Image (cartoon, rainbow, N blue to C red; front, side):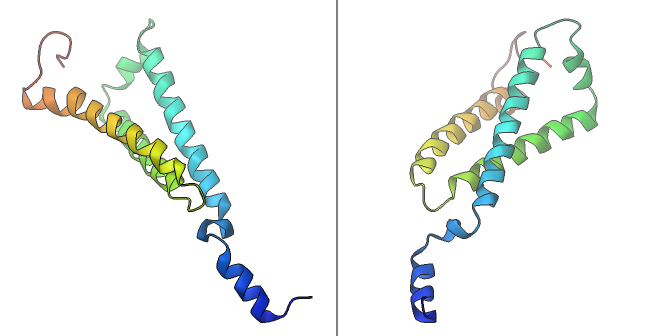
Length: 122
């Protein structure tokens, strides 16, 4: 049987995330579900009767899409913070960089008039 000093020494060596692995697993699951919802919505935008386009004309639905997007990004960032997996950050940083560039090109540039034409007309 270990004495208290040995238990404290062992617990001090454990990574910070080892005590709460469920939080990181849940964050990974939420991020995965958000990405899958985005892919499913993107695929459904190309098939008649185009219900997704009609749904997105509602401001409440637009707010829901924005909340799902922010939730997915936040979950992915939390998932990357797990201290015992440094390679996760190397995986998440390029994903978020490309996602940020996609937002700039597809949302901000047309809204500011920097990107136009019939393809991106609203």
